[in-house]
Image 1 (tube, rainbow, N blue to C red):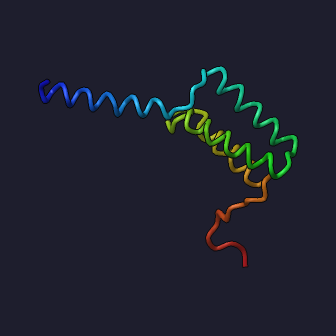
Image 2 (image 1 turned 45 degrees about the vertical axis):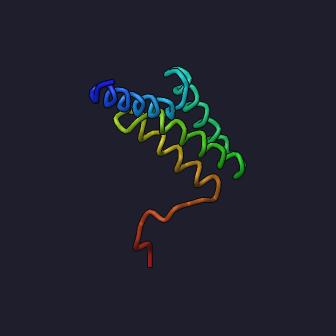
Length: 97
């Protein structure tokens, strides 16, 4: 086996591993799940369910990469779920005095 064959095979293994980590769902499933999670957030879920929504939305964030138009929307969903779960973050370093 030549060095070139080894390099190509190793490179392909890296690509296969990256594809294996991407959630397995179709575009339709991802869009439907995003909408369903937003509806749950609007329905004022329990803190426990809000934590589960954070996990599910994080999976969607992996599906909608940074270049996808819905990436920021899913980030907003995660922040809304954090607030519903009582996990508010301090976004402003100074805060009010």
